Image (cartoon, rainbow, N blue to C red; front, top):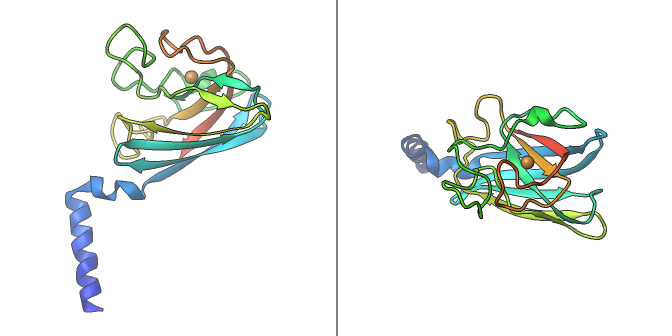
Length: 175
Ligand SMILES: [Cu+2]
């Protein structure tokens, strides 16, 4: 009992001194809705050593590749979802891993979401450079952030959004 208490105090002190050690306990979730307001999926988000891991599960989409990004405002008002703002871009970078301009990409840029013939997709993305802690690179910065799926594939190189077309689904990233 006494040893357990001591261990508890020691680990609390450790987390206070090195908050990153406690990062693994932070998580977030997303409820993804389409333009009609129908829930079509979810995402689970957690802190990892390499950044923030996003596990997405969606259905009722057209098959093929769809751009998917973290956007800068935690507000999803359909049907156009323009309230979600531009991409989450705390480093003022250009869009896409293959952009010829530097720096790139946006922190909120993700690889394309590959949707099967059945309209379903499940994929994992790691967002390096983002956190669930405090500060400018946090998905919980002032105003929050959201996860947005687009109608078309992201070319991963063209500003500001990879020619990925309309926003067809959106979900606020929530604690
Ligand atoms: Cu987007």
